[in-house]
Length: 188
Image 1 (cartoon, helix red, strand yellow):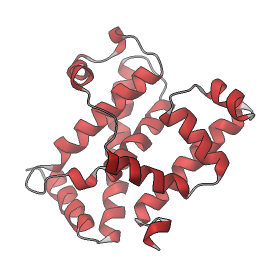
Image 2 (cartoon, rainbow, N blue to C red; image 1 turned 30 degrees about the horizontal axis):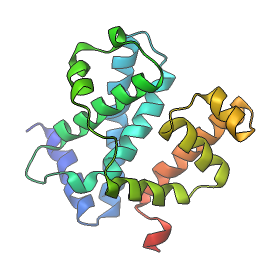
Image 3 (tube, helix red, strand yellow; image 1 turned 60 degrees about the horizontal axis):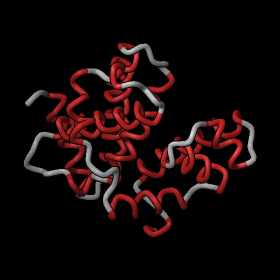
């Protein structure tokens, strides 16, 4: 087990045991690891670097909502990168990337991709989204969950495209803060 793996796993286990500081540290370190992972893969296929931030946020949200599925006896990073690969494939699907653009090591993930969320993770995500103002929640729901383009979302919500982008960005940032703090209205 590498030092990085050991340190991250220690933070994950402490976070699962209720240590909010360790969990925030884990999410912070994973965000850096995942950002680099997505930048490498997206630039390799000629995609925008800005997409890496969106996919990284999606992956962190999935890690948070599915943390209960992590097996404490297994290594952490393979579990994290499995989620990351699924999120990358989801992103490429949503952005209409052709199969030829998907890296070969992700083709298997595409073929084996399971349903996007379980009932429990849907419940967690719903609770997180309730924390947001309507504009942010609706923009994230439409773009990130329903898979609509920014233009389609702007038309659907009666906003400018810029307002949709700002609401999605700020909403994801606010969700990341809630995830890091580990609190929702239900927890209070």
